[in-house]
Length: 236
Image (tube, rainbow, N blue to C red):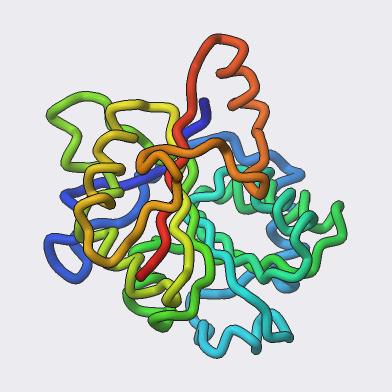
C-alpha cells in the first residue's frame, strides 16, 4: 500500500505543533519537473496568494472537496473526472507527486482541480476559512506502526477538531487506511467526538464509497489479502 506523508511531531499541541508530513527524498523525473513548471500556473495556488475567496481560483461556485496528502494524484484526478460538479483542492508537499498530479490532470482535461504544495496543517489553520468544505478526505496516511511513534499519527483529537471547524454542517469526513490498529484509533477518536456522527449503518466501518477510486497499490494489497477500512463521518 502507498501511504501519504504525515505528521512529524505530537499533533497540534500548539497552533503549529506539527506539520502534516515528513519530507522524504524521492526521484523527481524530468517529466514531473516539466509538468510542475508548465501547469502550475494553471492549477497551482502559490503560498503568497490569498486562498480566499476560492471562487477566485476555481472561477465558479461549487461544492468543495479537500484531499490532504494526495500522493501522486491518481485518486484526485479520477474523482475530479467523475465528479465535474465539485471543486477539488489537493494539498501535497511531495514535489514529484505534485508534478505527476498536474500532468495527469492536464492529460485528462479536468478543470476543477487546484493544488497547494504546502503543509496541510498550515493551510487549514491559517489559509482556509471555517465551514467551507463539503467533503474532507485523507486516504492512507502514514500509520507509524511502532508504539513509540504513535504520537506522530496525524489523525488524533486536536487534528479532528481542526477538520470539524473547516467542514460545513452536514459535511463529510472520509478516512481510509490499510492498518487496522490505526483504523481502530481513528474510529474511537471520532465515535467519542460530539461534533461527528458515523454514517456507517453498523456504527463502525463501511464499504468503500463509490467516489473513492481503487489505486493500483490497493488492488495489489487486495491480491495479497490486505483489507482496507473506510470511515465516513458527518459533521453535526
